[in-house]
Length: 303
Image (cartoon, rainbow, N blue to C red; front, side, top):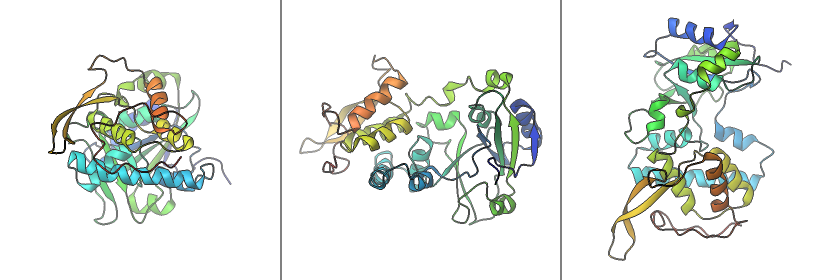
């Protein structure tokens, strides 16, 4: 059995040539793209499915991750007044595991993600027709919401299908006309595509800020689950100030301000450490629960 994906349409000596080919042959208004830094990924399945099948994750931790995913979906939809599909799409885009896959309408943004491997390694680049048979695939555009600026920068779309769980399955490739291309990553590719860290940066993005504040408010969990969430969920430190309260003094409307805009230094590594400490029961609870505490009943400790 091969240890790399072989169902490719064409192989290129560099990522730049692969992207140029995509730009010349596949219009951004008709196709979507996905870049992967390695051709050793034999499947392309959703993050939620990977969590469910990862035997390195204790079953109890998998259940706690999924529980928080369900809470986040309900509360993000409620707080930002989003349709269910968009709330789920934003969770996926900002690092929360769902049954969706990330795509983009821009070949150069797909190239950014494809350029993450070591020089000399082989990666993959997928092209997917945007127009599919109704009911077979659900492709959603995340770019239009005004406060989701990272989704706009990444020209973000999501893919889901009840029939196809793996974008690399032979059936999916055949029925959806998916084309996979292999490339060898060159030093020039790194210089051209890998330096655009602004594509990923969510720290002034209010959608990412709401997700992080909601996780703050759900209370502490076991250390392993807290570490997994801190490693995967987009980092966006925001400060809340109460705009209006109800008759009992509970916050009804809050205003969000990016921590950096409020004068606090932003460091993504430090913020991930802080999130781990806030969400893990291995550390004392030293943070107040003001702006978001009443979005849902505070769960009992599962530590």
